[in-house]
Length: 444
Image 1 (cartoon, rainbow, N blue to C red):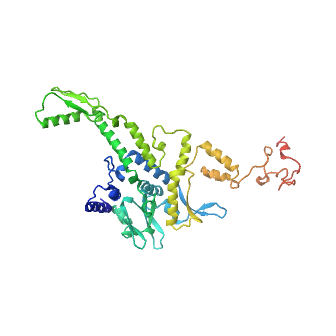
Image 2 (cartoon, one colour; image 1 turned 180 degrees about the vertical axis):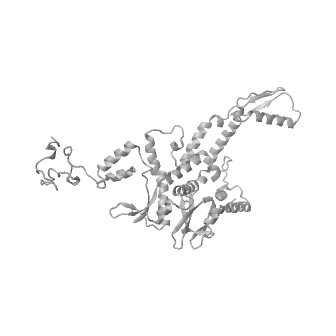
Image 3 (cartoon, rainbow, N blue to C red; image 1 turned 180 degrees about the horizontal axis):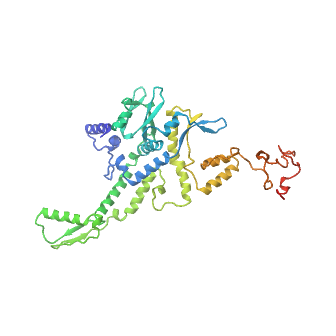
């Protein structure tokens, strides 16, 4: 039991309100749902829908590249490869890579509404590495002056060693803190787990009910009856236990029972919960997907849209929850690492996330290069191909020319015809009144 769990348990016992999960469920991590199922970080992640939603959102955000850029006078941007933050984003510490670090913080943000990482700095104040902390082991302390600090319950020798030089109460300037939907306190995010506890608990209850049903050989309950009287209570209980042992479990499904002394088995009918389990389970899966803002098709829920429509749904998924989480990372990162957000800023590269099929990409490149607003080499770099000579110039469409005609800039005989003023074009040697299209083809 962690420090805050012990504090919460002590406060509950002193106040006499041992069942008030609304007040103490966040600290003690023992929130009980109305279905009777305890819903905590650990138990919720054992549920397939919750685990899938958290892992999908965490993985999708983590795989999008995040970098530091400088804004150019012409409105473009260039990456700052030598900036310390670029190194920190790629290797936040010596035991995690950038993907694992972002995935861990994003998972905490999705499930608990808060993601924490302690920045360990050198003597100049530059962050050397980041130590991610589980949100259930972080407490907020507010000072009368308006300052606030974070109390971190160290867990394990490794974390203790990494935070050895840090004070017990870590100043806010050294805690990278992501928040989701702050409502009751602007310094803390809201726990999604607490908000949807009843829905998760109901789904967990249905799942356990069906698991027990299968564990009993997928048989309904029933009654063993006889006209004879049992010699004692122990004999009756022994008969019940023996029957349960022989008939329960998937391996005993279909087994033959031999009844003696006038025993008769009378099965009971299916309850409404049993007969409509599939419908109830599908509804709960959709309800959890709705709570986490994850499209149901990503959970492979039967009956969801398939085919071309999924491309549009994927774009909406990016424009909705994913871009919202990315904006939280960007805004908090710029503020925490003292970037002005204008000349030097953080930015996400959504290109890999929205990469379309081959035909769609090539069609888009053709329109962009001939538009014109993209250079040939920019399109090639988008596909991981090397640059080509003269590929950095944005080109525009020109009048048609005979086959085999080579412009002067490429070593040809020169431009033919005239420009729009009626005089020969730059480098040209043709008649201003002659149309290049009227020239014979080369070799004719």
